[in-house]
Image 1 (tube, rainbow over the protein chains, first blue to last red):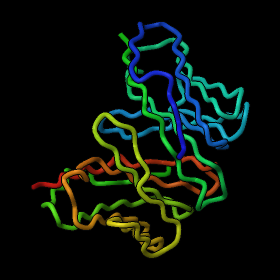
Image 2 (image 1 turned 90 degrees about the vertical axis):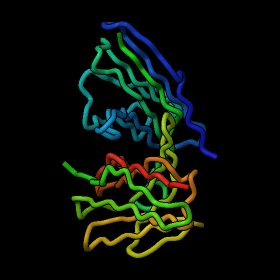
Image 3 (image 1 turned 30 degrees about the vertical axis):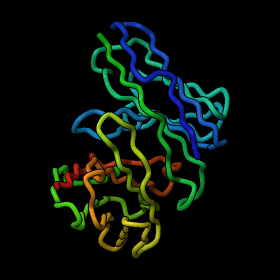
Length: 116
Length: 112
């Protein structure tokens, strides 16, 4: 089974703090993703990576950065946390492919971040 | 902006009935389609994926894809109370680098 593990289940941070969310997958997947999920807005893509040291902006990258130094690990960084970044953060990975099998994504357990 | 649309529900069905969940998408270049189930407070769990026109069955679940009409559906037969959850439809788009775009989800309630 694919295992995607996020470092924290719950986090509480103060406004202005630099926040690191870590994600590790154990299936040698090429692609990794960070989404945030808010009521009524669904899952929105923040950043994704299709290879080590490669990253692309998603739909809502403002206020975030990412790092992928090793294939299995993808980190999301909130440079200066703000209250509007309070959300559920979900990491996912997929094998990779050109459509069809291999593009399905598997999710970690999520990190509920509260910025106060 | 490539979009995936779902009716937010809630959709209520009696136990043992067929639940029908629908999803439409805006981009004809969409390649693959996914259904995820998400229980309250949990992360999404993959149920099925489909990328060819027609039906794909897996146990009590059937995914249907109609690319000409740009819709995807999920049928759940013999619905159980444990099927009560939010169902997310997602699509990957040509040239999108395997990233998935999600609908906002349909809440399903299976009533005793």
